[in-house]
Structure formats: C-alpha cells, structure tokens
Image (cartoon, rainbow, N blue to C red; front, side, top):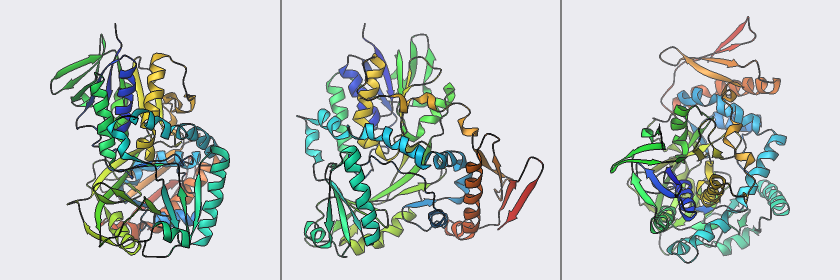
Length: 490
C-alpha cells in the first residue's frame, strides 16, 4: 500500500517537497488557499544563490544599530509599535550572530547552499523550466572603494572555503558589462555561479505541473482545518476532506500559527519585502541583476520588466502594506539606471520566514508522529526549495541523507527557548509604556545587548515613530534587579 502525505503550502519549498515525495511513490495532496507560488515565492529577486554561503547576521556595531533604529534606511524598516513582538526572537538572533556561533550557522547553511544549483537543474532538465534559469549570475556594485575591498576579501574567503566563484570588476570593466548604468561605481563583484530566474512564479508553476503530471493532486483549501484522525491527518479542501498518514508543514511565515496548535512553537519571525516593476527608457538594457551595496536594493531584469526589490520590514502580521522602502529606493534606482514608468498598479508584498539561528527548520515535528516541518528559509526559499524537498523526502522514507540534517532539526527549538533571553511587553491599552524583562537564564552579554539596543531605540524613537505617524511619549521600564526598577522617558 503506498504511503500518503498532505503537503501544506504550495510555495517553492512545498511544491519541491510534494514533487520529491510523489517521485518516491507517495500519494500526495498539495494544499494551499491560493495557486502554487503566489506567496513569498512570487515576489523574490529571482536568484538561485549559490554564493549565499553566509547568512545575514544580526548587526552588532553600535553605529549600525543606531542607523537602523533611526528607521530611515532602505535596507531595513520597522513599525515602532510592532517591536514588542520581535524582541525575543531578535535577541536570540543577536546571540546566535556572535562570531563563534555565527561560524556554526555559516557551515550548516553552506552545506545546503552548495547543492542548490544542481538540485534545481536536476528538476528542470529537459522541461519548460530550463528556459527560466539563466546562467548569468548577478552583480553587487559598490560606490565606496573601502567597502569594495572588504567585500572582495570576503569573496576570496568564500571561494577558498566553499568553492564560490566570482569576478572582481573595476569601474571600467563594470561599465563595459553594464553600459547603461548612469553612475560610475568603484567596482563590482560578479557572482558567476548563481542562476537568475526570469519569472520566479513561472518556475514554481512549472515544478507544480511536473508534480501533477507525475500523478500528484493540487487542492485549494485552508491549512488551519488540519486535524488528527485515526488514519493520520485530515484537512478540508474545496472538493471535500482529504486524509493522509503524514503531513508536511511548508507554510512559510505562517507555519508557526499552525504548528502552535500541535504543541510546537519555534521562534519564527517574518521579514516583509516589496517589489515593483519598471520599464526602461529608450534602448537601455540591464544584462543581469544588480544589487546596490550601499542602499541594499536589487534591480533584476524579469519577463515583467525591471524588478526593484527592497530589504526587510518588521511589522505586525496583520498590518497593511507600507512600501516606504520602495519610495526611498526608487529615486536612487533612477539615478543608477534609466527607469521608465512603473508597470504595476500597486507594489507587491510578501513575508520571508526567519529563524534566530539563521537555519531552516527541516525534519520531524517534535511530539507529533507523522508530522514534518519544512520552513524558515528566510531569503533563500527559492534557492533551497528543491534541496529541502529532496532532503525531507529522504528523511520521511528513512533514506541515507545526502546532507546531514542535524543542524536543521525542529527539536533544536525547545519549548522554553523563547523565554531564554527576555521580552518586551506593552503596558496599557495605548502601548505608551513598554516593560523590559530579561530572564534569569540570560547571560551577561545578552543583558548588556538588551540594554544597549534599548538605549539606541529609545533615542531614535521620536523620529522613527513620527515617520510612521505614531509619535507619542513612551516609557521604558527596565528592572535593574529583582527588587528595583529603573524608568526613563523619551
């Protein structure tokens, strides 16, 4: 009798998991409330990032924290009143970014990343998907020679340690490679291994068609209807209930809303991102994706036009879109490239699912037989979808893994991990007072980081809140000891 599974979530990760399971003989239903690839997989930068062996660490320099706290940057923005909900996971993120711990994250992350191009090509070979995968790499351009030299040194380390290939371009070579850039830059790093996807949504749809052609079932339904039954798991679709012996949760940033019901609540947090497409004036072209290193935005040539993508925005899950980063990035992008009119009626927005240790969550859900996790890929869901699908399918069948899965095991986030560092909780109905607490288990470094970050945030609050239309006095209540409290106002 064939094994069976319901895969919840039809983004790149869920589609890849469903496809790999189906090709191993599973009866698979791939369930989503939308069509395949219409969530975060729709609006990314379209890069299969073989060079991305270094995940994004939490900034540790005071000057960088002050810049971000000012809430005027293009690469990072936040809604001030959303911050209490991010304190615990971001403190864990900060702790995990300590150099020795970060090295562990790099090594584990790189083991997945080095497989990404081969795994995509293995799925796409001989199909319509191959035409979407362009072997042109992408460029990171620099205005400051000092930053360019530092980036070249890190690129050399990535080549030495992880086999990453690149070419360093001076200003003249860069101008020859991208002749329609309007501003001279100090230089660029051309990452030559990555694949550039001309239409990320179309790629996910192509893999989903392979799944259906192999005998899989696509279904529209609500993952929130998932429940335990005698046979395993049941979920409701528009065509009626479906049941299977196993379930895979691949819902991206929404995953923890479901897993919490079954006793598993990892400290997942979302980073929102936006994009907008533009035309180009005259006969201008952009030959490959270009990221402006100082500003943090990406310009990528797509089927739909030149896609301008933003960095990260921290907001409440139910907050309406606020594409302020696009508004900040567009004037700079127009000075870099001769952009014409906007081609989209409204900006697109999606949410990237992130973990504090910068590694995805792949494997058996703690305490739930027959339930599996595949989420938390942050900026690399498109990149690592096929790798994750193959790894998870092999684990579910008891095959020898092609990548050691231990660093990504869901059980690494214990039930008490969110209380390890502390929390920031609003007091009062208007959120005008925040109470800061640091757990007794937190070490001195975490306590110092908490207070330093709060000091920066407190000083930056009036300007940041005013920019979001939330200007109001706040009080930060910081217990100095078990018997004393210290309060400050801004």
